[in-house]
Picture 1 (cartoon, rainbow, N blue to C red):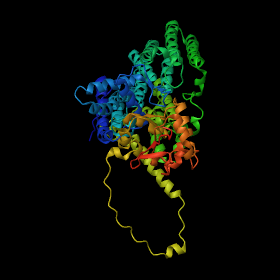
Picture 2: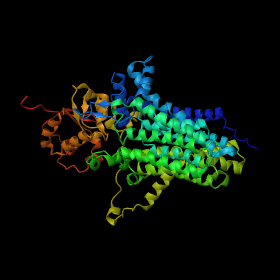
Picture 3: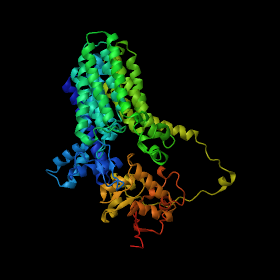
Length: 623
């Protein structure tokens, strides 16, 4: 029986159709799986804080006013987050409010926003797969890529309903930048420049990947590809305009002269604008000359770019957290879950590390197979795909939140390898391509590797010895059957301290200042009229250090510190009693006593039955 060949999905319309089909499947699965969570929780701390900023902007806070006065009052915090996302959320929320009441419109916004970015990200993956497959099996690679994306739901961790933080949009821009390079056209240069500019104005976590894409355009120009000068010129001009334009839109004029390491600021804007102008000039001056003239021009542009960025703020040589108070690194910053390295995650649970790294390993194997062909090695884009995967692996190894990028970079490589192998052994049969794509989806490899690891751990774990005395004991009576509890609703299975219900009682109380562990701050702002001394943001140097000092004091002596800060309420969540932010606190400290359910006498219990215990600071006797 002769099997039908895989249709050619390389034409634009078919490629978009394949990406749309995969996006629709992913969106439906995410909606049914995670949509119910929106009723019970706001997501993580960043989702809650983004909602606070969206509400403030919608309520009339100025576009250029990003000072969150309800955090660490009286100082407040100037948030380094992009105002562009706040504006997009407010626009979407305004659209929903045409036909929905305010609360329902907000839920619809939180539900829809992350799903909007699935299609462009999926399209970028298919465009990259098509380039990696080349003329021989590029269309089949698009087909395989769509199937892998439709199956591999862990890919969409940052795109689930309620995820209104910036990670999904940044992943989307990084993939579009890579796809722009894959297109190999002037339009591709424009796309890559625009996506890079927008992505960097949203946040800097994908900076390493954007640098590699820019280097690819420059290298193509250096080795004299036919259309390379025009593509580099389009990329450079678009990047410079996008960076400057988006920066001016989201940054108040009075901060245009401020340099920073944790967000787009004067130093990076000047550097990228200079790079764009420099690359454009290099093309104009050397496009008719060979590499011996082009190389010095490109090197000069690179030196000037790096010199401007570092020269305007030398502290940035120490990374995005260069300006963080060193004291925060002793009790908080290294313990933030999403920036933990794989070696730190491994002892606590092998499964997380294995599932995150499995797609990268598969992508590396796929790249090696593709690179075994001399013809494919002649395409410089293959080396960009390998370099960006390697960079994704390095970033994901050092901070697990970056593993999502590496997993997306791996998918087009895996899809191209599947299409190529099926073309070689089975003549490109559609059924075989579909089955192979289903089988090699990274989600299965990750789960299989995790199960193997569990078995290895079980086999190597020392077994307890059974003594003769223990063996002589009669068998224990079976435990009485306990009625099973009803399965909690999906949103109720997360962190109890972050659920909406945990803050209902505090919302009923008069507005005041809450003193608590770090992670509760954004939820206090989102659910109540009160302010918070803490939140998990590195620009809150003063508030985090001051709150830590008070919580670390002996319980009965901490009253003076709480009054000095103006605290009205003290919050505590028992299930967080072993969190890393308690490290270094003595057993008699205020935080440890609260964790043990032993509040000092100067705290009046207000609500101690819910997930979050609420205490009110007793008024001074002098009042």
